[in-house]
Image (cartoon, helix red, strand yellow):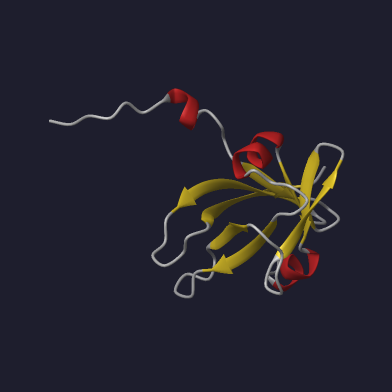
Length: 124
């Protein structure tokens, strides 16, 4: 029998991001640390062609024409994806839209990929 200890430290960080009323997606400090975000980083978004309601975030090392550049303000990281969120129909002006991020592996993709599990509630 071969067993592997699963470290509580590895599973202690809950990865989250939120679409702000401005249309920018912001990352919690713990998420930014786990994803090793920097001002040189970029992310891409993807949808499942078979299940269009499933949204994915792919962390890539460098900005290219298909990616969104990561910005930093103080100690806070965000991505300006307003037009994308508008096209996806997210009402981030009237609702707080946040996502729990779950790391997934996909065949043929070497980059870190996260399934975004949406939570939504009216803004106060």
